Length: 440
Image: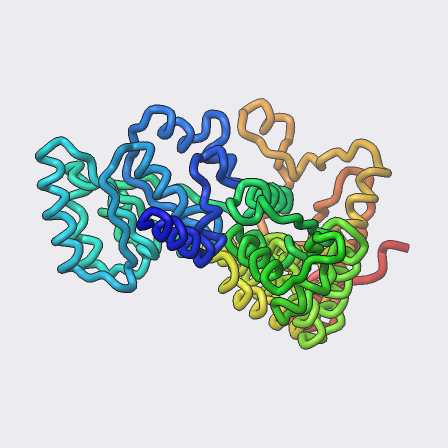
């Protein structure tokens, strides 16, 4: 009788266990994504094959496998496994863990300490780990969503391998969900049809745990149809999550239409409209690096020398996106978008570059005038290379001389506009060259 009650209790516990926990991979072959780490010749794959693991810090967004890797490493390496959260633990608890680990270590056992959100440990907490990690008493696995170069002190960081985990690609999310549907002890016995994969993938945002949670919530919210099949479509996903799904095909017209509206809003100096399109792209799961790259291009193509800070800000934001990641990097993107949209506009540099390219392609060989040629040897000097070149700094910073190729009449590709800083550039160039329309 006791056995029956135990089985019933186990069944109840199983049903009350969140799907994301039930679906946690049991081997690295079940892990979705991260092929750069667990694919053929990947560093983690090699460690799993040998069973010898170094201390590691996993850096990446939520829901991509950091905790899963820690538990798989503990099992594969036959470690005594301790898991703590940096939010809840202090130096006293760390010292107690190390004390127990020393006893195990002296009896020939291996110890693994997994610290979730290790970036939240202060310096003294991190320092308390140093000696145990260095001597091998503990193998440390840390998980962080923040750049460890900034959040983990150098001494501890130097004792760990740092591996970056990536958001899951669309097909990787799809593969994860299919595995869960076919292997989960509960769901595998149900008839479930996912009609709108794109919606589920969009809602997951490249986060495997979120994808599984979305699936579980939708199933709980659903009712089988007359054929006993649970059909998961966009309407059901939206109803169960109380959230509208942004329609945005990353490879289709909607993608290109949205980025076009985004760029044109900034070009039109409307930061508010640009923020709408930015928010739509982010909400739909667009790669923030793609957006940041477009901002860097925009800074030169549509602002140029009208505001030279634009390119600095755009490149700084691109770097911030790489360092921080989403969702916080959305704040950086918003700063760049509002600045670039509000900045004075000029495409003079862009059009000058296009015209110069076209001119060169049509002109054939362009020879450098002898006075502009370098003369590193005595023979070249005797040939007159650089002889009549006038060094501008000897003439107050400017001297009127020919810099164009031989037999090419001076022309003006770059025509600054009366916008922002370019107005001053225009005035200076007009003054220096007594500028006339020599293109005609």
